[in-house]
Image: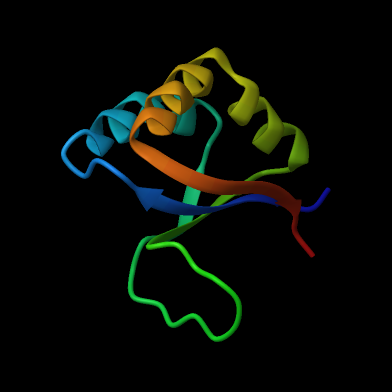
Length: 95
């Protein structure tokens, strides 16, 4: 089984409240063994459009990545994120 990744591009609308999402998502990340490969940082958009924040999260496999996203823990956190940010979010299998 190959690893799987969340690739998330985020535009935060409320910088003051966005940390509420990060705190709420922590238990899901811990429970499902999420490993942050990219978490923000400087970037250069070479083609297409970009958002201000980019995140890549590694999981053991696709089933774990899906389970984390659909978990009650992350579902609650996602509702908070959606109040304070817009995102493009995919789950993708690794090579």
